[in-house]
Each structure stands twice: as structure tokens, then as C-alpha cells.
Length: 511
Image (tube, rainbow, N blue to C red; front, side):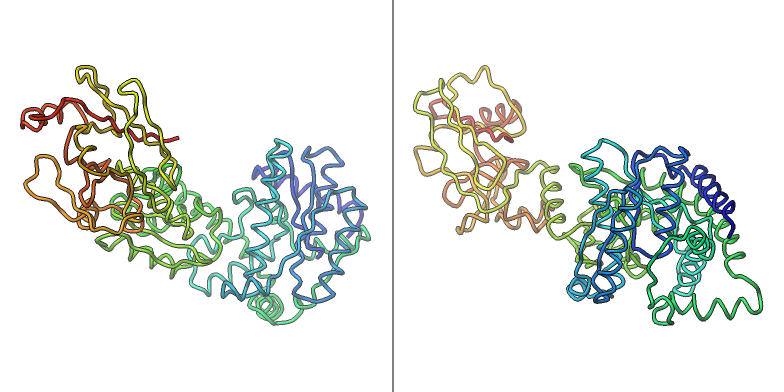
């Protein structure tokens, strides 16, 4: 490659990246392994920056996976020297990929990819918080990677997304070198006299990608010429098809997606009737919004999700997903999450249904204010974000109601100990007889009938005396009243006869 051809390389990358909007940011972090691809990427971006073709600040991030003793450390030193020469700020992270792969039952290659992309995202967010600038992460994939990935995914039975991969822009990840071949990058570095590391494992046929790169593609070239040329053409055609389908799928996703207290979920009834092409993309979009990636979400996982969506579980249903994640179904709600995330979602579902939930066992004795209706007792409900407020009401003509207040005849407090709590903090079997009902029902059966997620039933807050529930916020009360309608029923039924007419207002408020 001649010196003037290096300028042409810069022009091609600039034209390609501008057409895709890749440089619409304030900072670009280069994923710098030390190999020829990433080293060329760093030099090209620095060249564009020095020529004032882009005004992004350039940073670098190197991940040492420690999979090749000695060699990985040498590459880390090479990267440090390279960034020092080019005045680029570098962050180096060390990972134990072997340990991570064993704990998660995945290959070391997959472990490295997962840890690497998590590191990219975390570093990008840290830079955004520190600088206030939009950050994108540049990866050194090129035309040869496109061809190899297409063929690998084709023989895995992949759909369009697998064939049109990697993409120039995916979230904050950008790939400015997809317009260049590997040989062009190597020639570019050799012309400039820039040193780079060579991963000797890439020269073998160990691993699927290396088999395509070093064995199958050379065989194809003997009869059909360079396979990257027609594969690149096919990639572009499929990209147009995928862009259209994706736009339609996003409309379906938006129509059936909602935020449940900030948690993205899909409506089962909404997506069940979609064509599988749309349904699969809606499920994938939910996975990506929940976790920020589509790493290792495969066809088998998708089919499991379809089965869960098409089933009719009587309560909660869970499915194991990659990396310890879960698919979750409750009623019309379908979601993804970690174990803790799913439990938080179940709490949000119960709260949306109108119930109050504590994070653990709660038991709180309710005491009356000593100063009559002039005072109010406030007490925090254990393991929760709620305050229980108690006030004596002697004038029932000026009452204020809300969804989480209950008016109880004061005589109830003279007849026994009244407590706020949940099943997690109570051993005694509990029953509830709703005002106006002819019979009582066991609490566990009641919560089941109300379709409260099973995983949070033991945390539902209520007011009780002995083994009887007096008030279950979100459902109803056994005595007294909660609003004007129930007050009229209370007095019409003669429940106030023989009572003093004084009530205790118990309100539960979020802190």
C-alpha cells in the first residue's frame, strides 16, 4: 500500500461512518485488544480526529482475559505503549474468564465476550456521567468478519438477524471498519510501520470461526473467487429487508409493551395473536430492553418463551434463561429479569393491583393516640417503605377518604390486640369475613383467588385482631368503613348500634 492510499482508507471510513451516523457522539471508546484490527481502528480514528474530520474525543479500553499466560500480559503492555504514543487515555481491566465460564456453564470465548461487552457498557456510562457527553464504543469488525459471521449463523439455522450481523450501529456499539477488508487493515498498518500483536490461535482451525477463515473460505476462493464480495452484496440486500421488518416489529412492540413501575413488560393477550415473525421480534426486543443485549438469546430460548406465552398458568410461571436470567409470566404480564428482578416485578404487580407489600416479615402493634383527635400516632411498618398513621375521629361529618385509609370502631381496640402485619410475620391461621358477606375465607385461599403473585403473598400487609383480618388494603374490610358508600352501608346495617360513634382512622402512606 502506498502512502497516498492510507489517506483513501481514512476517506472510505469517514464516508461510510457518516452515512450510518456512527460519529454522532462526543466520545468514542475503542475496544483495543492489541491485534491488527483494533490497532488499525485506533489509528484511523486518531487520523480522522487529527484532520478535524471528526470532533469526538478518543479513549481506549483493553480487557485482559488471562486465557493465554504471558501472551495476554505482553498484549496489555503493547496496548499501553501504543496509547502513550498516540496520547490516548487508556483503561485496562482484568478478567478471570475461565472462572466465569465454569460458573455460568459457557465456553471461555463466550465468557470473554460477555465480560467484554459488560465492561464496554459500564465504562461508557461512567464517562457519560463524568463528562456529560454521549459515548459510543467502537469495535474493529470488518468485511471478513461479516462474511464469516453470515456463514456461521447460516449453518446454525439463524434468521435474518443472524445473517445481517454484525451491524454498523447497535445501541452504543459502532463498527466503522465494515467497509474494509482485513488485508487492507494489515497493509495500512504495515505502510505506517505500526506494531501490533498476532493471536497465534487465529492461524489454526481450532474453533468454528477459524475453520471458516483458514479452511473453508480458501477452498471456496479456488472456484468462486473472494467469497466476501457476494456475501457483502447479500448482506446489504438482507439489511434492507430487515430494516423494514424491524420498523413494523417495533410498532407491534410499542403497542403491546408497557412500563410497570419502570419495568418493561409485554401484554400476553396483545402479542399472542401476532405472526411469529412479529412475536419473535417483540420478545427479543423485550430481552434487549431489559438486559441491554441479545447475547446468547437463541432459538431454543425463544421457543420456550412462545410456549410460556401460549400456556394458561393458574399463577406465576418461570423459565430458566441464559446467564441465570428468568422468563416470567403472571396473568397478562410477560417479562424477563434476574431472580431479584423478577421478585421486584411481582411486588410491582401486587402493588398495581392495589395491595401493600413489605420486603420481609412485618408485625406492628397499633396503639391509639393519647391526646384524642388532636394527636396522631405514626409508626414505620417493618421491612417496608410505608408509615402507618393512627388518629381518633369523633366527628364523622367531615371525613376524608383515600384508597389506603380505614375507619374502625374504637371499641375494636378495647376488645383485643390489633396489629398490622403480613403472613410472613404471623404463624396463626388467618381468615377474613368481608363486610356484607355471609361467610369467611382462609387468607391463603383468598390471596389465590385474588390472583396475587404467589412469590409475594407472604408479604401482603393487612390489619388483624387475633386470627381475624379486619382490613386488607386493596381488597376490603371486615368492620367499619373505607369510603362514603361503605359508611352508608355500615350505618344502614345497624353495625353502629351500641357503639360510641368514635372511630379510629388508620392510614398507610408511602414514605
